[in-house]
Image (cartoon, rainbow, N blue to C red; front, side, top):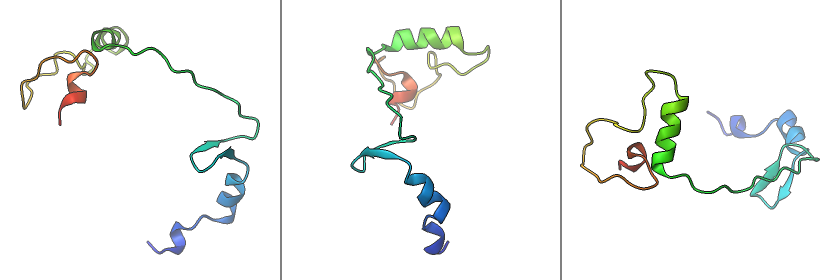
Length: 86
């Protein structure tokens, strides 16, 4: 890939000019965007696993009972076993 291919084209530059933000870190897609996302309370591992069992389709791979682990680990209060393997 050439360095020219990595440069934004006129259409991309025009589209990006419609966005606003604070510095280089926050960008909104529309000038009138004023959405604020509130933080929520943490959800523990057991509650998340219960939600999975309730909401996912039959046969889906659930985090609980994930099978044989490379290393035996004690259950974590927040993270599922899929989130803890390193």
